[in-house]
Image (cartoon, rainbow, N blue to C red; front, side, top):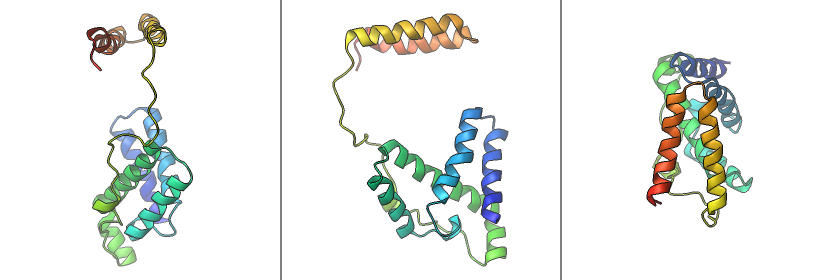
Length: 162
């Protein structure tokens, strides 16, 4: 199937651009989960299809971050197909790769998750966290990067920010 070939090329594009293997794995498995929610190829997805998918994700209880990830993946893959394979889709299927049902009404803004936010972590929990991070600096393969990350985590805490 042509869409499957496009999905493979999409995943390869992440390898070529030098992304970490864990990111590449996400970009090989998530498109299949997202596209599996539609009865049509990505270039035929309508706004109503996207709305139905999003509603189903909400009803299924998926976290806000996961729902955003699904929509972002759909947007990324649709854009990839439109730019790289738009002419082929037009010649093979007689359709122009348009907006893909992705309009301003089905964009999700990250103003905060819809989950309840609890109290901030206590002093003991934070001390345990910083102890763990510091222990990882000592065994890291890139000491300078690990030390930098520890410093960037610790500085706002010590300065009273947040």
